Image (tube, rainbow, N blue to C red):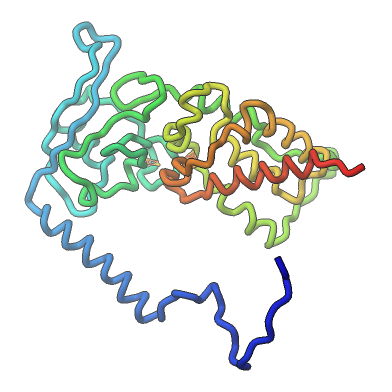
Length: 290
Ligand code: SF4
Ligand code: FES
């Protein structure tokens, strides 16, 4: 394919692809306003109503309750109610044995990833008014259930630790001579998205490959490795070491670019893109020219 460009016929500034399809600030504002209106409308419809939630229950320790089941709760709707708010209400007002994890309530701690209406979502980031009723709330699939909505995260954490998720630099001076490790703004920009991970496990739970291969590192761990492998402050030797971990049998090559992890990540991390980039890095590392 020729790379020669035809001379432009007019001298008008070429269209900026970044701006293509972009709307004027006024139009953007109107669009944003439209979304706010839509949300307000949905909430107004639910005002004074109760929300029907169906919550997965399983308690292996209580005799007669070992069989998984769904319990129905009708929770009074309040403005801005999230899925987490609804299960908290059910626990506080109807059944104190209902068990789930939560902490920050602002999409930071990553402890309340559930399977809501057939999709991995963060409870505190999901508005009840956006969901079809009854809202079905289950534990993350492909993880062992400990109790009700609580799953065993040990395997997920093991995979995260397997990629050595900490900064390593062969030139780092002795502790008493440590200096600030500066990073360029461009490099910071490159790894910015990967550093948003809150270890919620939603991506791993959505991944078909991880479901079938228990040793697969999984999207979250690979993304964590990406954060360090792309950090310019780490040396070439460490980068090679990281790529060796990633290109092993259960590493990046197991990914079949199904994008399910990217679709469910509550922090909008482009996981599949990062995995693809690491595959390219691994190929480059192994290319030899004689
Ligand atoms: S990559 Fe996204 S979905 Fe996966 S653990 Fe991190 S925040 Fe959660
Ligand atoms: S409660 Fe912390 S992320 Fe939802």
